[in-house]
Every structure is written in structure tokens, then in C-alpha cells.
Length: 169
Image (cartoon, rainbow, N blue to C red; front, side, top):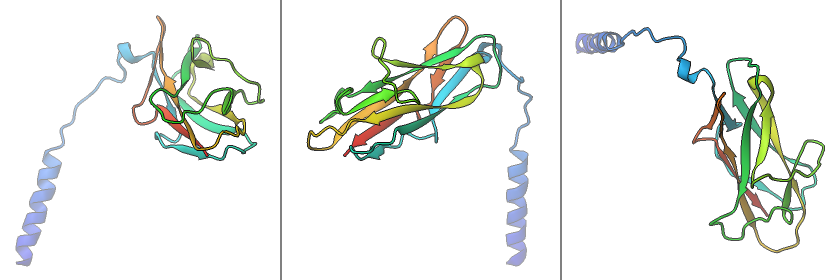
């Protein structure tokens, strides 16, 4: 019986080794040379729960993925969305989107932008200031990362890390 187990194990190892196919893939595809990704860090769509009276800025870290340094700056966008949400949080009443110094940012065409100089891989942060709104109940919003596409580059998002649901309690 012991030898049957060893023969079976040897067969499994042989099968596993034989099924690995070696392929030489190109180092890079020209059509993807200027294609980048921006995601929330860590790489999840997890909900962030905060107390409305929090005075410290809420930090939502993001990661820009690139393997190159370019002559252009890459830009991506994010938007505060509340459509379809019961008890939505209201921008300007429940919270503001701010820069790292706490200065209020104004959306352009309903979205905020983040610039990545020379399209270098880096981490950045979206900052939220809570306004301690006295309206009772839990308020919700979703901060969605949005890609960008120009004649020079494309910035995409991952489906697993493109939105950050925000719950203000």
C-alpha cells in the first residue's frame, strides 16, 4: 500500500511538471507602453466608517502604477457619488474634499483631479474634511476613481479598488 502511495505521488508530480508550458512572451507591448493604473491603497473597495465629529483629515491613499518616467504628466480624476444612496452625505454640508493643507477643492465638471508628474509610479492621497453636520442619522457617499484617456496615455482603474464607500456616523 505504501508503494502505491509513492507511485501515485510520483505520477502527480510528473503530471504537474509536464503540464507547465514554457512560452516566450514579449517584454512589452507597444499598445500598452503608455497605459497606467490608479487604485485605492490597499487594493480593495472596503468601506471607510468615520465619526462626523472627527477633526483630523480623513486620508484615502491611492497608488499610481507605472514602470516608466515620461516627458508628460498623467492625470486622473475622482468623483463623489451619491445617486441611489439612501441618506446621502452632502458635499459642502457633511464633508469637503480638501488638499493636504486643508484648503477646500472645487470640482470641475463634477470631478476632482490628481496629477502624476512625469507619469512616475507613486502614492498620493485624497483628503476629506468632515464638517460635523448636526443632521441626525448615518450619511453615505462613494468616492470613485475615474480613469483618463488622452492622445498620449490611458489611465485605468482596477475593478477591485476603484471606489471607496464612505459612511459618516
